[in-house]
Image 1: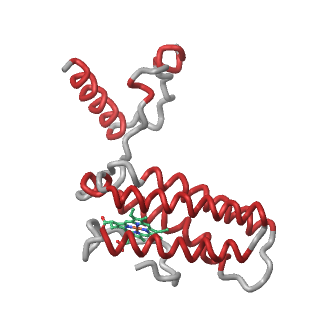
Image 2 (image 1 turned 45 degrees about the vertical axis):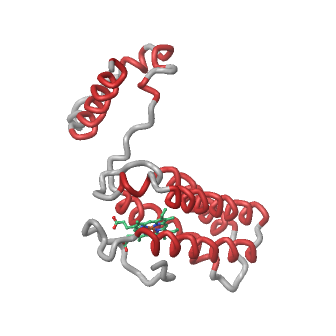
Amino acid sequence: MRQGTISIALACAVLAAACEPAPLDKPIARSEALQAPSRGLGSPDDLPLPLAVSLNETMVALVDFAADGVWRPAASETPLTDTQWALIDQNAVNLIAAASLITMKGQGVNDEVWIVNPDWRRWSLEMQATAAQVRSAVTARDQERLRLAGDRLVEICQTCHQAFKPGLPSMGVTRFPVYPKPSTN
Ligand code: HEC
């Protein structure tokens, strides 16, 4: 009971902090935890911050951009440059991190239901593992492996979308810039 009360109080404090950031013209105050680092260890202060956007927004603004940054160079017929490989690696890192984010309850109306479904978790994990394959292809500078990992990524997006995506997106989120890309629907 005490634990529950503390959790709720903490959630409110975190949400209030997210909703009412400090004024931009004021210096950011150091938190107590930062002033006394040993205090935070093992305490509720160590919990991840809540995901303060919807999973749909995370898809549009993060997952989709990162996947594009893998698919475009993966389709290249010419040898990739070091810069291109470095960018692919960064996009793979974004996908790996995003895979963890989409297993968290965001602010979307369906998010809570989706994340507890074992299939949701499985496809998120597959996305993460495939992004790790992309990184291996980068390390090996292997374009064929990159192409195969990219193809697998398309399959994962499609499979999860077929299983979970509602007929209409749950929010009116639009992707910018809008440009042609491999279909994931
Ligand atoms: C674990 C399941 C899952 C995975 C994996 C997944 N998505 Fe999604 N995605 C969804 C769901 C569900 C929605 C609809 C969200 C909503 O409407 O609230 C969505 C929405 C989107 C949207 C918003 C546009 C729309 O049509 O609703 C884009 C863009 C998107 N996903 C891209 C991708 C890409 C690219 C990948 C793969 C790299 C991917 N997603 C992987 C579940 C997933």
